[in-house]
Amino acid sequence: MNLTNTERESFVKRYWYQTIAVIIFCIILGGYIQLEFTEGDVVVKKITMIVDGAPTAVDSYNFVYEYKWAEIVTNFLYSLSMALAISMFILKVIQEDEDKIREERAIKREKKHKKEIAENVFKGVFDRLLPQEIFNVLQDDIIKADVIRKNIRWVYDFEIDSKNNAIKLKRNVTYEVHNLTNSDHVEDFSYTFSKTAYTSTEIQSLKWHDKEDKEATSVYYETKEKVENHLEHDPGENMDKVFTTIEIPPNKARLINFVSLEEHTTGIEFVRDTHFNGACAIGWGLHVNFPKGYDFTIMSLFPGEVQTIIDDEGKKVYEYEGGMLKGQGIEFVLCKNV
Image 1: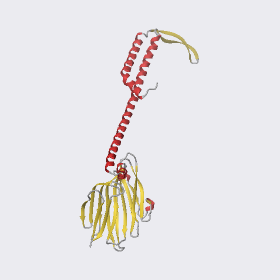
Image 2: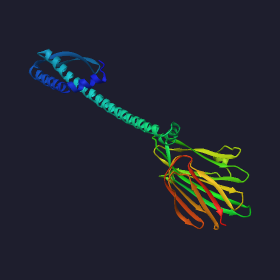
Image 3: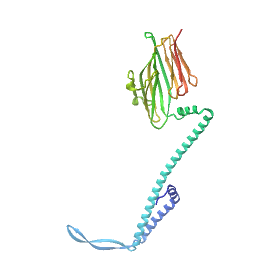
């Protein structure tokens, strides 16, 4: 007999106590019949057995019940009570497992339903406030993002090369990439830079490691003078690009460090350049070291105010604690004092 989930659940709940009562009744009735109707006599029969290779007649003693039906009924009642107990136990275990599965499915459906409602409400509000094109950008870059960058730190070290009439800039970039999902994420790393007659860029290193366990999971790429050996290279006419991928485990964070060395051959009076974020991020800082006799300024494209933490001769430190969208950054100028 095949029972559906509803029928099985209904049977166990409705007839659990009745079945227990039937089991107890069968055991008591079987015990009563066994005690009251198991009288009989011992009957001796002659049987032949082989003993030491020779047939030998021996006595066989057998108990014969006076009421043969009593033995049959007693065994039936005991077997029935055992079968009912085992069946009810199995049905109850199955029901508990199915109840657990249904509860988990109900919780998942509820979470999904709440998420859909929240997304619809969120989308409805933004549809009224923003054009669809802008909402699509926010949805792709923020709402549906699998990762987010945090604690971005840029370190600029300027050096004046009077011999070659050039200004050198070493950029040391560090940031965290947090995987917000429950599955592995492959993060695309890329760095695009100008390639003109007045600028040159050398990729020095790319490093990353697990934020919580630096020693055990560190990975190091030494790319100085070996860009093609360690990073994919996509040369263009006026722009150059190096790129690779970085695997991030579920709910983990990678700390990434990238270093490049640039040479601006437009003279030693000033250098002007830009630096933008490649993805949405939270928290940014810039530490600048430059020669005496020069001044360094920035123009921020962040939505909030950038604070100047240190403003000394040859050193400036900036901090921004808010959120940043993809493509936001700064324009900076290093200029020789008049």
